Image (tube, rainbow, N blue to C red):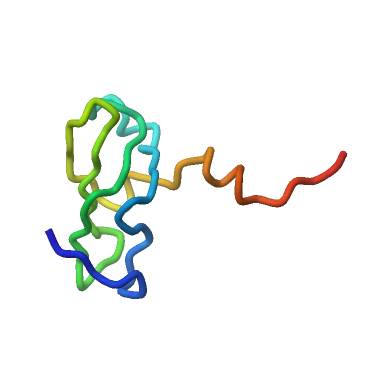
Length: 83
């Protein structure tokens, strides 16, 4: 597994919480996980590969287009708006 600097064109880094995109959830043991490794694609960042650890401790490799940021982490970092 290659660990590369964050500026190397990949969107996620080791330790990031992610969520699988809806169309891919049925193919894996969970709908969210943690990135534990990164394999960058030097030609197309869309095909950067991420090793994901799921809550049941299983792992799988997914491409960048199959995952998105974990929404609960985004909610904590977004400014709140008063209604």
